[in-house]
Image 1 (spheres, rainbow, N blue to C red):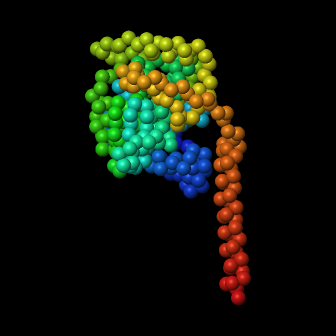
Image 2 (cartoon, rainbow, N blue to C red):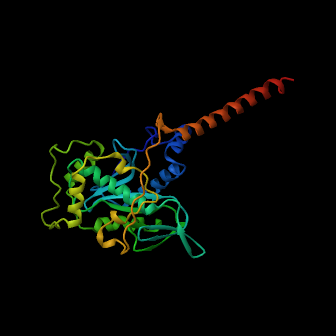
Image 3 (cartoon, one colour):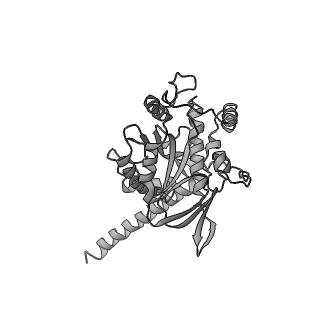
Length: 309
């Protein structure tokens, strides 16, 4: 498996220093570094199973929008978005709901990972279609657990859920799945993701091997494509306000719950950024720097007035 690592703030050796770790935490959130470590565990397992026909793109930022696709896995079965979580404890994936379970009772989690990974997949699909790339079938979202201490009770989940002890089984299922992408198109697709080109640029066909019949696109897919082609790409449509939004309209019809999807909440304007960070993040960084200055001043005073007596 070919791995293309686009993780921000890391050096040539793939390491993240202390300063970069603080900067990344302020910019991407407190779970950023732990999610990177969780990704390494899952990628190592996938790399031992998947063969040469697969390409994995790690932490790629979609151009023009502040969205990082955690893991893009491209192979003969299609395109998958993998979101790896380092959480521990008991959780419940019920339809498009993501709940924490305490004493047998489920309550909505602060961040809906089902909705998040579904929207990551939708963002990548729109990104590909804006370049005129037609991929058989939708981009499939997958939520993965890296810790054996995390248990997920799945009841018709809106996205595929894989626990830590089933990562190799998931990889094996990809090897046995029906191929829909040719090797040439897999490499072309990976290149177009990293180096996007205008929609009018020539591209190879994405037809599957001749021995495999291609299914006709569904009516839902046709409507989706028509609606996306009707309007230009708006970065706000791909914004990362995923936490509480419903993932019901983002999954294949066969896996949806019977209850209607809830309307999306109104989007908030993007926070003003300075040097790539918001004002609260800059305030936190300034506070850390001030504490460091105070500590250094105290050390100097102690050295001058106490050790020289």
